[in-house]
Amino acid sequence: MLPFFRLDGRMAIVTGGGRGIGQALALGLAEAGADVAVIARTKDDLEKTVRMIEEAGRKGIAISADVTSREAVHRAVRKVADEWGRIDILVNNAGMNIRTKALEVTDDEWHKIMETNLHSAFMMAQETAKVMKDQGKGKIINITSVGGHVALRTGVVYAATKAAIIQMTKNLAMEWAQYGINVNAIGPWYFKTPLTEKLLADKAYLNDILARTPIKRVGELEDLVGPVVFLAGDGADYITGQTLFVDGGMTIYGF
Image 1 (tube, helix red, strand yellow):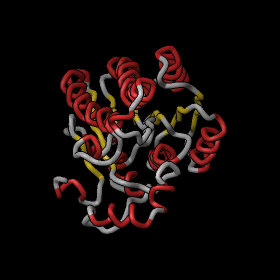
Image 2 (cartoon, helix red, strand yellow):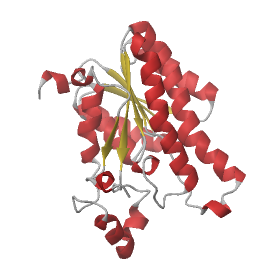
Image 3 (cartoon, one colour):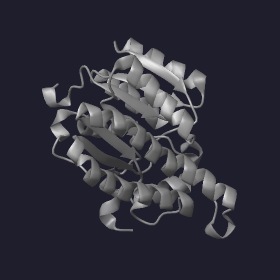
Image 4 (cartoon, helix red, strand yellow):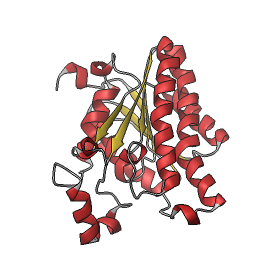
């Protein structure tokens, strides 16, 4: 592997790292050489991910925390910084969706999705950037969605949070460039995860997705690892404020 794509000696945090996309990204960072702390609510899932990180020859930390809580976020970031002495990479992956039609969205649903997808990402970025600022270097990667860029049947609140993350990425990149912090985002289309399993099992739904995707398949988790490892490494030092859509070409249609 080229040196630009190695992360040896780097310390990373991945939120939502217990399963699905977060777990795959945590393992990808570890395989590229990073030690990885994973944060989520479910301790058993986190411990499984840490075992896999350790099997890859890297150190792992499992932190069970609610990333919608400022106090919990602060404690989690401090734990990693105190134990490892630095934080080089943050992957903001924690998220959720409730597929309610716009006319039926409740206030509770609105606030839950906003807190989980948007507020948690900002708090994690803010707390981690305080550590990265003192180091003079760091990489923050926010996981957004093509649903933040084009209109889809994803649920209006989910789409609003993902669009906000795209814009937040730009603003944070502009403000924190002076501290050596690069802030970018990854925007996936449909990927095979525990959360999409039932949707993709519907043949008509799957066919509709494939009809919108020039590369006629849904994404595999491994398809996200390369882009994240690239943005986390030295090869992306001159890239900031960008959203890379990993979507099989879906967004080129402009639906």
